[in-house]
Image 1: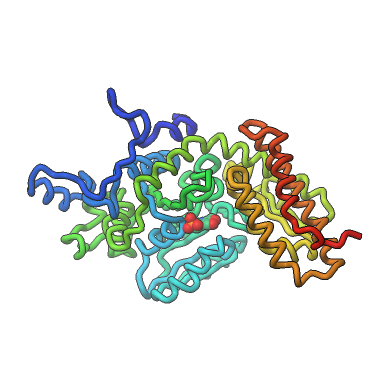
Image 2 (image 1 turned 45 degrees about the vertical axis):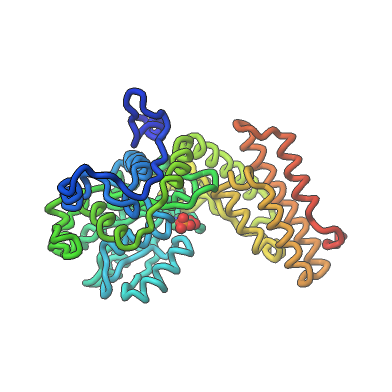
Length: 444
Ligand SMILES: Cc1ncc(COP(=O)(O)O)c(C=O)c1O
């Protein structure tokens, strides 16, 4: 099946006269005919549904779809991307263990790894992902149990060498976990390059409409948990009447354990309604990814040619230092870019920039919610009012206009295939301009 078809149909196959669209099963509990039936379900939770804290048919249809997209053995949704990162590691590590992570990862994940996991007694060893194989090997300790990296790092846009890290992780008998949020399985499927576990923040492109936060963990089923390093997989789980995960669930041991131990105890499972929204986003994912890549390329070329821009990170450009690595994981286009403006621009844009990032990574947010963006512009401008000198203001204004120009490019390119006409985009840009308080800027 082509990925476009999987995005529409995987995970839910309605039978004769059943609803065409994945139904929202808004129920906390499920019904059993007899106490024997209940007992059987508790003995083998994969056979039927127990409780909505960790299982729901709507969510499970989406889990199956994402699993099909990544090519894994099983998936489990979480209420956020952070929850997916956390559970993906807690399923392997305990107090006293360590893991290795690329240093170029999303800032929220750095907080989780460097501070919160540390409080739980788990050490994160950060490595430069561009370091040589030997330097990375040197970072391993006897208690190191996993390796973590982002396919395309947020916001550095460093490309992670999945094959290099998979090789080193496997030499050390530990799994490689990849955060594949930015490329999504439409652009890259990390299992094909040796990754063992994939996680996503579905809050970004998978959702695509900025309506629902979420995350997911996908298990390749390829890692050998019986190699002696992971007794939690091969010894009886006292909290689950003595289940030995590798024995009872074979290749699906990791993902079943994540659900039956961790989701049961932490309960950060999405609601049926949340999964329904995510599913709608997934249906259009391939079309949107193509457009995001096209937009990012146009803006990166525009920025590269502008003298107010100090640097552009866009691995899709042949001049980018990660371009070859990008091609090595069969990625020819990238949906995001990051860039550095001149110093004056940063004065104003320090908070506006956050929204520009949203524009880059979830630009549909901007299209569907320009009012939100406008409020932020108002806030940014008023909070900067007292601290700007006249000369700085003029510089900032000219940089701000550059940002608006970029905004216009985004909106115009997006409108080609969507409901936004060029007239509408100019209207939005005019509206944004009209909220800048008069007299704030001194134009020379
Ligand atoms: C690459 C990446 N991973 C994980 C996360 C965390 O996801 P969430 O915000 O859904 O918790 C983010 C959030 O921006 C991200 O960019």
